[in-house]
Length: 421
Image (cartoon, rainbow, N blue to C red; front, side):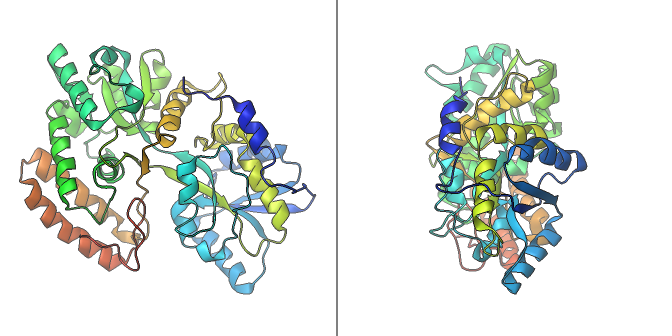
């Protein structure tokens, strides 16, 4: 039901830059993505082969990628026409990127477009592709949804009620959470729970709203399978039916969807008082100010957002589209089921993305540990929420100040280290 007709989007995005005519000049596409040999080959032979001009697609490790772009900016001229990378890498290059406000972005995800402004009044990059975390459910669970609840637009209160209903009906908790040693629990707290309750990931870490978030999760934990502290890839527990409803990265749900596609659904993460928090891995395409042929670079950029190109990019990279597309029937079930959930989540009116942390360097592990320790102390250890948050906030503040890392979404931009109130 989440599928959209590709034709309308194709008509609007087919020529995304008014007046640009494709010439024969070769565009150097310098990218940190699609670096594995198989993906790079698919990009050249499948994704970019439909472009009317010539493209030299060159993947690179992040370090050399940034170094070359900065060197060309310093020199005032260069050969790179188009760049592709994660949102966080684009932040470091903002001053060297051309304004793309003249690009027709009809059909491109509006939430991600706003991120592409990088806190300026200019469109610094255009979203290219995305990956994220979603929810999954065995269809057996659907009959236990709270009355009036829509699984595609749940609230946290409804999720808690649903988990209680399943536990009451079956005699055992059926909600599952990846709280094991290799589980991605820290991403849930950072990018889902906190944005949904505080509209923040860092600044309001110890706020009253954060207390509400942890208390809500404690309520959910009552109806969570106790084995969750050993679960890391939720596809396994979904297949054994130890759990009926779970949260995880799309890649860690794929086996369940592919093995038993008729038994499962994918759906968006719940919403809280400040929106539907979710953590997208956003990849964008941008044009350096030093691009040798700005018009040809913009023509290629427009081509990358066409629905048919987005589908081929999904095949090549396993990253999902950022425009409304109808996914072909020959896509794996995991792509079909996850794609519908991602489209509903990122396109929802209350979408509130919490981005991957940026600017932390080798302190990223300590940053993650702040949230994991809070979970273990509050939820598993039963310690006082206020006491734990005050304590952990001190650790978080020291990390942010040592890294001198500015805020990222959903926190407001900061000069210098992101503050912890």
